[in-house]
Length: 235
Ligand code: APR
Image (tube, rainbow, N blue to C red; front, side, top):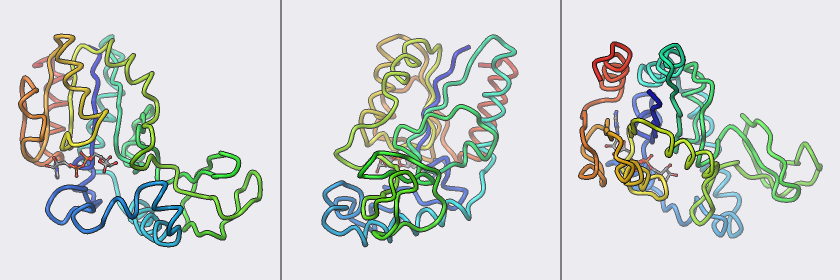
């Protein structure tokens, strides 16, 4: 069985990383237009760096949870059953990888990488960034930014994502509100292909009506249950 899994902030919520649109979520407390766009970075790079430095430290302090571990287990086990898990995440944290997932497609980039606005080089990055940070590749300062996709920028890896969606036997969305495209449109694309679609979330998402089935509850309970059912051949 080829399963396409799309994860969102909800899969990392129980690791202590905030979501965006839940009560108390990041975009309920901060204005994304002022913190997560190229225009915001050009206007006030210090404020944007401060926001991402805080989030980067939070990711480094967080630990993967049972949902991340269950997905890593599924990714490792499916090939023996002739299947494959394509793990696409909207999250910029590395908790899927730290839980043991090997191929993770970060369509919104990775907060533990930094990219140079001058030469375009990207490098692993765990410390704070400032406007004085020099690019390790070209040496120029002033242009280093978090290697994440901001509002108004094009998400990454859309071709392999489209190919994986076209080859999937099942589509599963976990911990995402279905508020941001193109990710929010993946379930409709799966529906058009006629493959089963399943939502795992704390509560019905904006696209809940498109899914065939759903399991609502904390990801650390619902995802291991789902993975157990798949590996036992019950779904
Ligand atoms: N278990 C499962 N689901 C949860 C949990 C949990 N413990 N806690 C929250 N959720 C669900 C919420 O019900 C919500 O539907 O996770 C979802 C989080 O939604 P958002 O905060 O909108 O996050 P996400 O869908 O990942 O946002 C997509 O928007 O701002 C951009 O780039 C950002 O990648 C992000 C994108």
